[in-house]
Image (cartoon, rainbow over all chains, first blue to last red; front, top):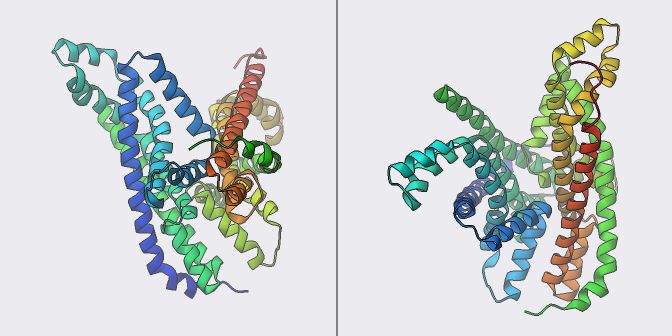
Length: 220
Length: 223
C-alpha cells in the first residue's frame, strides 16, 4: 500500500476540532488540578493532624503507583454503581484532576521549600496571617519557583487527556478513531493526529524553555 | 454498595494471568528499550550531525506525544508495510520505543554529569572511545542515572495498561473483560489497582536497595 496524504488532509478539519476539545479538557483539568494541589499544599503546612498527613500520603502513593487508565476506569465505571450519575466527561476530568494534583502537590512542595524562611518571618512581623500570609506572600513565591516543572506537568496532562478516548470523550484521539473506522486509512489519519499532538506539546515545551530563561534573567 | 468478595476468588486467577503478562511485557520492553536508549544517547552526542539529529528527532517525537497514539500508529503502520505481528509483540515494541526515548535522556544526563576531563584522560592513556565509556565514564554515571532510571521503569509499568486498547490480554484488558462479565467494576478495577501498586512499590524498593549497594562502593582514585 502507498501512503495517500489526501486522507490526512481530508481529515484535518475534524482533527483540528478534536484538538480544540483536547486543549479545552487539558486546560480545565490543569486549572482544577492546580487549585486542588494548592489547597492540599496549604493544608499540609497548616494542619498538624496525623490523619490528614497520612491520608494525603496514601493518596499520592496510590495515584503515582497505579496507571491513569485504571484510575479513569475506576471513576467512570464505579460512579454509577454508587449512585453518582456524572457521565463520561465529568468522570474523565475528575480522574485527570485527581491524578495530576498528586504530582502538582509534589511540585509545589519543592517550590515552597525554596521560599526563604525570612519571607514567613517578615510577613508575620507585618501582622499578616492566614489567607493574607499565604495568598499575598508565600503562594506567589511558590508558584514562580514552580513554573518550569508546572509547564512540564501541563504537557503531561495534555498527553493524559488522550486516555479519555476509551471512555467515549470525543477529543483528538477519539475523533481520529472515528474517522479511520469509516475510511479505513488508519495510517494516514493517525499520522495527522500524531503530528498535531506533537505540535501542541512541543509548543508548550518550547514556551516553557523561553519562560524559564526569562525568569532566570529577572532573578539575575 | 457492598463488596462481592467471591469476585476476587473466582476471577483472581485470570487477573493474575494478566498480571504475569504485564510483567513479561514490561521486562521485555526494558530489556529492549535500555540498550536502544543507550545507543540513542551515544548517537545524540555523536560528531556526525545526521546521526545526532536523527536521535534528537526520535527522542523529541516520542517524548512529546501521548503513548496511546504511538501504540495505535505502530499497530497500524507495521501491517501497512507488510509486517504482521501479534498484538503482544507490537505492544512490547511500542513500549520499548517509548521507554528508550526517556532512557536516552536519563543516560545522556548521567554521561554529561561526569567531567569532560575524565573522558579526555582516558583517551590520553590510549583507551578507545568505547573503552573509555565502558571503564571510566559509565561506572561514574551510574550513581546519577539510577534514581531517574527507576522512575522511568515505574512509568513503563503504568503505561503498559494502555496496551489494553490494542487488545493485548494484559492485566487491564483482563479487568475490562471481568467487569463486562460480572458487572462488578469496582471489584475488578480495585483488584488490578492493588496489584499495580504492589508491583510499583516492590520495584521501587528493590531499585533503591540496588542504588545503595552500587553507590556506597568506595571511589577508586581521585576525580
